[in-house]
Length: 85
Image (cartoon, rainbow, N blue to C red; front, side, top):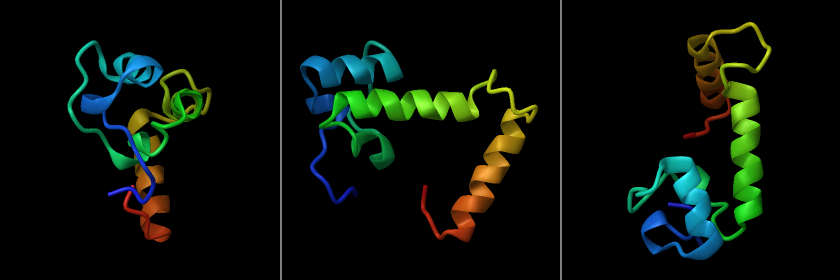
């Protein structure tokens, strides 16, 4: 659970709901990952975080690495830092 106030998709309204819908489709699930919902009270921060994620992990990121390689690197770095995400 996140240690900050969050708005889950099932509770979202207005701009926050719009951002969840862009991320997860017209009918987002009632709950989402804490790393995403932790930005839910600041929709512009959520958008910026998701755009950064796409720039890093998206198919056209220019790194020359495959999606599998990027995910493996992220997993190793997270494990080394004892990060659950």
